[in-house]
Image 1 (cartoon, rainbow, N blue to C red):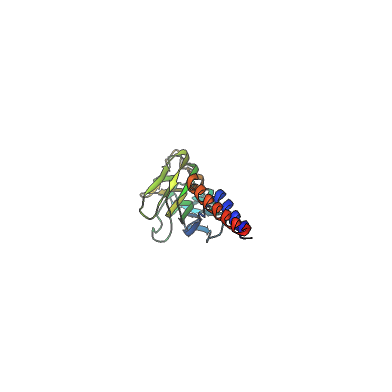
Image 2 (cartoon, rainbow, N blue to C red):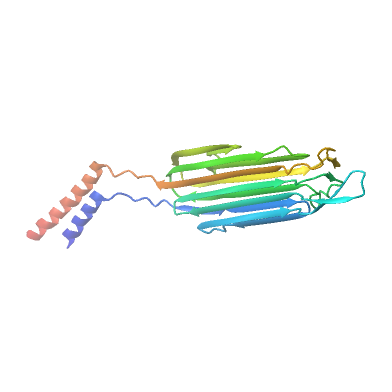
Length: 294
């Protein structure tokens, strides 16, 4: 019995290769979608978040409309009603956290218009709501994960980010913004491993390397916003054309990305060392066998 046991041990030593036990632990996360919209005195907002769920799939929207605004003709006691400002926002995301991976794709879109305006007699109170013809919209889809790995690992990071804007010159102060970004770095010493950001552009990325044990941050974000119709004073339409066109503003951004981790193969014991262990056990087996024969 002893002989068989020792022979089995020798064989195991000859073929054994240490196995990796790489573990990724999520310490904190911020996967969420948000949409906000305001137009005149109307406003709407919605958001959702993952709350440490393994899979997160969500879409939120916000809509606001100033459907009927009062417009006064300059020097005329008569009043008219017209089509007012509107604003829309939408954000969506599908993301997953695996044993050794983080992946997701999402988008953010915002749009709005100041509507058809002939004359605005007064601006709304900036502290409470937007006035006639004024609008704002914003949307965000965000993945931000803080995680720990307990030993060195190889990583691969691939995907894309894009952002774009469509707008027409409108009345008063107006604008739009669109941005998408990706970041991967160490939280221990604040070292950046990979970082990119785009405005009105697109980018594909494919990075790989090796990272040591410790805490890391991975984030990928899409953000879009528009605003307009903030008139500096009373707006009087042109005598030949009292209707101002329904100018529109549209901004959007998207992302898709995957971070994969894998164990680094540990070195196999040197052949000479393994052979010596096997030979020693073999000699021990031989001595035991001779004693029994004697």
